[in-house]
Image (cartoon, rainbow, N blue to C red):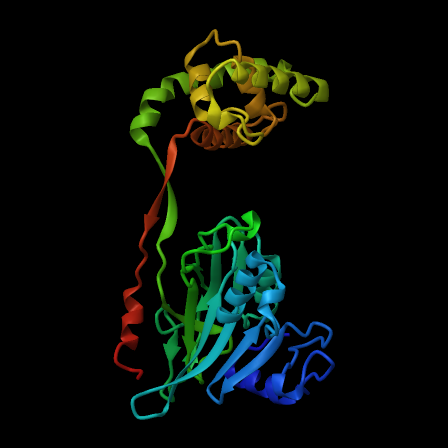
Length: 353
């Protein structure tokens, strides 16, 4: 079900009969958005100019839950996924309708919240729950080459979409079971539209969160690049002859890598997902006679099949995949936080109360 405007939300609220049971009274005003069996997905009316789409039920007795789940529920109640509002200008006239969107409550995969956003965000607004969370929306035409008629109706002439970054919560308290001891940043995005704009066209009104950008440590890579290039050439020669997809060979490689790590100091490599820590991988690539040089090649080839590389396009793709994994494995990259800006949205200054 798509609720595309504030009026759609208000109408839907008025059409829903409140759910009354031994758990909920008429005063609780529990109104499921769609399936009444999914009563936690509900519409709440704050006042005539504000409605909230929630993905949790009212907390009857928070103390009945463990500390970590109690924290989760409190944050979910205080920071609902979708909020619809009407904003008025200084004269009290309707200026915009605004939607506020919040992502996950936890750093880990908050699947219930993600599914709710996919289901109930308005038309042409999409939530991405990949490694980087963002809201993709269809941009307002006034900024993107859309014609405004004499009657003030915006006519879209483009299908361009823009991604707006929303961070994940920084604290990992849910998976660890440790209660939150500091206030979580309230990560949210707001979008506005005028009543006469086409359905699905939105203008982003902030806030702009610092967005992570992966950068290459050029100085570090410059010193290591000759060794990486020689290793790549050697790997391309021996790779097709290596049984890297054989299970017994795989077990042998892992066993020998772990035995080598136990005899040296690689504390960051003792975890299963850090099979080859950066310090060890760097030692291997710089030493042609290192006992784990074949193991390093196996590590790369298990992720990219070299046997099917028989065209120039395939060779280019194979090299790009190798470079990307090498940057990560040899710790040649870092994350830089970039503060995004959008001067076009400053036009709202002074228009609202």
